[in-house]
Length: 354
Length: 273
Image (cartoon, rainbow over all chains, first blue to last red; front, side, top):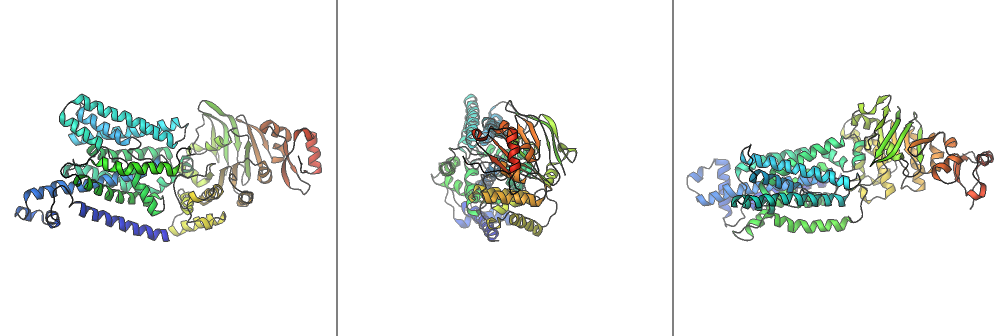
């Protein structure tokens, strides 16, 4: 099996790329720190429990930058990339459409609106971060289902690329309006800054304590989507075929939409909207792996998405010195032209059968 | 095994597609469903896997209500190929065929490989195994989808226009395959010549109900064909003893049963226009 050998090679390559990306991007940032110091701090902290730091081998300010800012941020970028990429791959299978992505279909802005409600509306029944994530999840879920049913209804019972995009655009508009309205109403500088941050998308809020929930959910999501790979494959053949092959189509789609919404919400509630990752990454992976088999595409998308966002974030935080470029801008600059390219390549002007 | 559609009624988008349609498969025989475009043939078989919901009637398999079977059980009994053999994503042909294994219980990686290889071989498309499904022609894709249903290893096939997109030699190939396979088969078919040749029994659907049923020679009678399709033609036995379906121009012969009988007696002729 030639293709199988190629996939094994790609896996090893992408895994190595991810590890290398962690190692190299952690040393990139506004403050120039020597490699030796960066890895010295990390190695000391991980393997010796911070012995040498207490002994005064490193500068406290450098230690803080490396251990409390850079490393959690790098690892969070890894989660964001992996999570959004794998969510994009899953959504493409669920709506039978290669242009689907949490951003394009309004799931991200749904999550963002949910998070804005949690932060700016005067309701509190859970402890901070958890409430934001929970509301973001509800927002994402609402957006996902509204887009799905709206597109299906408008397409006369079929999911057409055009109606799907229109539904995504409409839901995006509503959700952004909700977010903007809340910002307008709130008039609290911190709240506004935070919400503004989401709409641009940034990883700067990453801290060790905000890392565990998204990391767990992204890891679990990737594992579930990979294990369910052959079912996702069947979904890609269309509802009729999937049902005929023995899949409970509606149940599977609902449960997986919920899973995608959970993963996206856990990320977006912290980072805000980072667009096109779920669109670009699975496509590139499919191109290189020469298959659409989700048992391969899901884990590879996670690995490649992780590297992609780590580098995009490293670029965002270092290119303009201390003034940080929002990550969403970087991914939009890369993703939007890719999106246009896909539109032309696939000729979405004419409606397709599925 | 038998599948029975009992008094099925389907409403789609406020429009009554099927009002009261009953038909059943025949053990190890090919049963054809014919009718004009939009008469509800495909809609009927789409109710099998719940793709189209029916608001009245019942589907039974071996006497048991279809809703009592789990989806996987159904897939292990019925190999189904829809009308649409397209795919928005890039899979290799053997990937597509191996999806048919989902509902199979007999396991083992090697065994599965063998099933896929055998299915490809049965349909004569083993040379496409590693090709992308998207780069195949419509007809080749159709063959791959049928191979997928074959890989399901079922006792029954339900196929929506299996010969659609196929050239004449592949049309015959597929129909010969189905005949040879000898499984309980239900097909929606447009080509009345193939229907005459290969089907053991026909249901003719018109205006949401079964308009006529029986062996092809009885169903594809002049009057029925005119009523349902608005053209003049009938099925008969040719001079060589071959079942065939023929069209003729109305002015030439008129369309009355006596003429049909005369022609059946003499054997079908070719009607030049």
